[in-house]
Image (cartoon, rainbow, N blue to C red; front, side, top):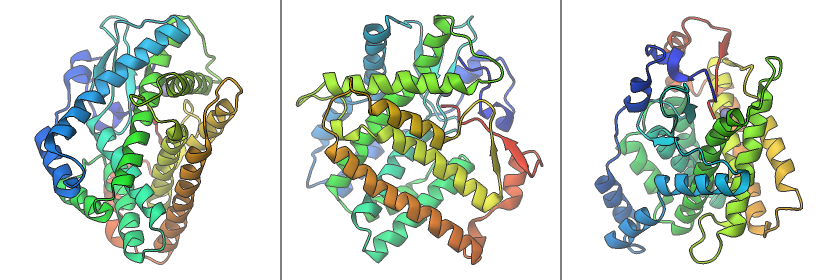
Length: 355
Ligand SMILES: [Zn+2]
């Protein structure tokens, strides 16, 4: 259970208003438009019917149900009252709202969905065609846009950004597949992490004021256990999660790390959060879990994918710093706007990454 709702301070919503959290936000999702975009770029691979079938087979609600099933199986926890909320509230964070009076719900923002998917597409494409200068340039620009406009300023990417990305991916079905498979593993991890907070509170687990970050590690550990169990047990042609995506939760931590890194380089924002350990620390704990003997599956393809990802992750960091130092990012840096968001506090910001 979390008490602080990350966007609360930023957007000045009245506190303790369940209705606003639960039903606040809007839906920008346009399924029909999404299908038409996919058909435009991948028409040789799918028909409209196949796309609709896919959406019915893999979707957020269904993943939520599977996660709940595994909580019952692995931890004897049913958490039946927990619902799913999925609107656009200008945050890439997921969180659980639990005031113990109203039914608890888990929020996964629409912004999260489009951002994570776009991030994976761009990073994998960049990694695959690293030697192609045009693709290199487009992918760097797009990832920078995601970090700056979308993550830092909370803006949903518009159709033009979406099309620019799809032009770069250029009908590469392999990249689409990789991104989609990793995306679902990240979704399952986030859902399980949030339910884990409710479970830990439910079994009366207490955390000291001095070490609140322990709760995050525990929630990560439970969430990753559930991801790996689903990978191992729901296999075959109808596999829920693909085995080679087992490092996707680490990629998710790297995503947050790049977001904070970009904020540091562009706006000198210092990450300071007493409750959440840094994404890098959390990532290292996840690696320790994956190494345990009880998890046995093929890791070769997953390791290969991840090492390619890490190459572009490093490249992004190097390029960002270099371009900043050379004054090449002046046009996209909105220092004043960033300062306003922080309420004028220039040196330090308490930020919660919510997950
Ligand atoms: Zn958490």
